[in-house]
Image (cartoon, rainbow over all chains, first blue to last red):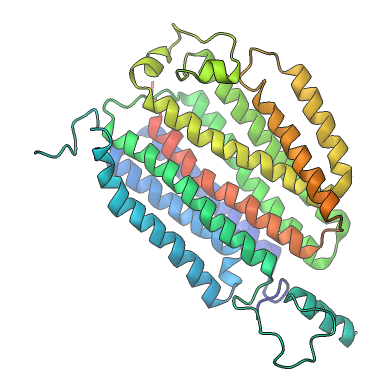
Length: 109
Length: 280
């Protein structure tokens, strides 16, 4: 049973996570400022780094890593499932509202 | 000592005092956590969908709009990087406040929460300066100026062309960042109430009145500053309905909210700023 004082809470691990987040942010800034990749690849790379950063924040700072498995999986699964629906169903279908200016994704009738 | 531990255990798991010995009368909590924490997690899960929808909308615009404007020079990127560092540092001070709460170290709870509020306020101020700079350069929306009371909008600035030809950029930018800034403001007020309880209310009132008087009528934040007044009213109502000395659980739950605000920025910063960088 999880309580607020049952897991290892040494300060050091939080400083390490904070340092890792700052380093990942610095990498993002360099990649973005130097424009190392074309836009779509850049979006993928930056999103990947953001997902890693968010995992560090959720796992350590928000303590989800130390919660029960049921709570961990239920929260992560439900949110990821909603984003999955947004990405695979709403995102491609958004063209139907208004065709994009570049003409990409317009369906032929 | 054993009795105190039992009462604490009962309180953590939402059981009435003395109910611990009544075997089978109360079920163990489903998620193994106290109800306030589960409630906050459920709220954050729903709020993440709000930001998810906004971020998907921004990404859609970014991919399908060609050419996409790149209004953020090195100065803007440096400013946004400092803002990011402020939020990351505020998360560290927040988690140190939670650790102090677990130790029952009341002075350090307040110190760390105050440090978190300072970082959060620095973020809001830097973001406000960035907004003002962009609006001065002509980045605005139709109707935006009159709603927010901006006295005059630049029609010949560097970014005026973006507002005219690619209105989806300012729409997505201001919509997303305004929503996040509102969350940060609510977070700072939330932390203030947990850290200083009723003593925070007059402080917030002074800040609100001073900001309302000092921000000129032509500034974009002249009307939005009254969010502080709404926050003051809500905080006062909450305090009136449930005046209490906030405990370790309350500090942990408000910490969850604050880390979520930080988490959302981890997606806004690269998507909005770094994907719209102008390399000169």
